[in-house]
Amino acid sequence: MLTRSTELAISEAALSPAEGAALYRLLTWLSPAFPVGAFAYSSGIEWAVEAGDIRNMATFRGWLGAMLSDGQGFCDAVLLVNAYRAASGCDPGKLSELAELAAAFVPSRERQLETLSQGRAFMDTARAAWNCAELERLMTGFDTGLAYPVAVGMVGAAHAVPLGAIVHAFLHAVVSNWISAGARLIPLGQTDSQRLLVALEQDVVAVGSRALHAGLDDLGSATFRADLASLRHEVQYTRLFRS
Image 1 (cartoon, one colour):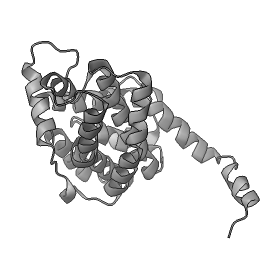
Image 2 (cartoon, helix red, strand yellow):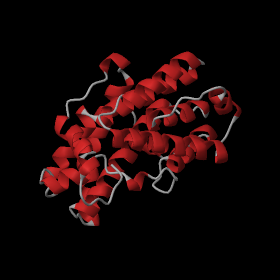
Image 3 (cartoon, one colour):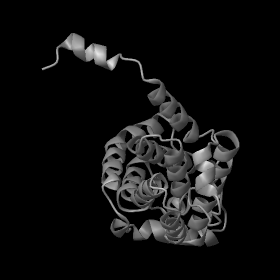
Image 4 (cartoon, helix red, strand yellow):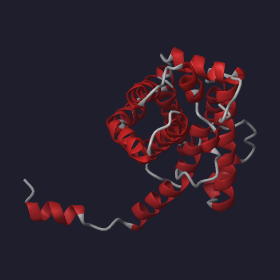
């Protein structure tokens, strides 16, 4: 059994150079400031607010919990995990097939625009500012459109950032963007936005853990209303967001 002083020494230990570099990169790549244009997309939340499905913090919490656990959040995390492993295993054929699947595994034209646009922006910026030989090797002859989670998985694998950390950071970034969209649409104040992040913490941890043990056969969505929202948004009369 560890003593209190031993626990403190462990918790205060400095990160190794590799750990520090991995954390630095994750904080950068999945920061709101990283230029993927995430602020322009709401994943159908804009229509859900107009339709009255999302009216306040409580209804927004329920909507996001479902999207995270049974819809887009879980599916994107599974795609990221499998892209990371295909890239780490030097399997370009599997990576290409996965990229095609990810581009097709969306419920609407706008959701496809969202994931492919962000994926392209993420990869372009990573290659321009954070390039490495392994990433260039992965991209050699790769002409398939890249969904956002696939691009993140590939870049993370190329830089040997631990997979578990990438999955949880990715889900945090996705949830943060959803909340940012809701804060402008409902609207929510900054404190309530933070309360939502707190409320979804265990959901993010649970979904990340599920995704790490999931295969492509586990892909599937049970969020019909959210999928419908992404379709209806395409013909919404006035819009702030692209999806």
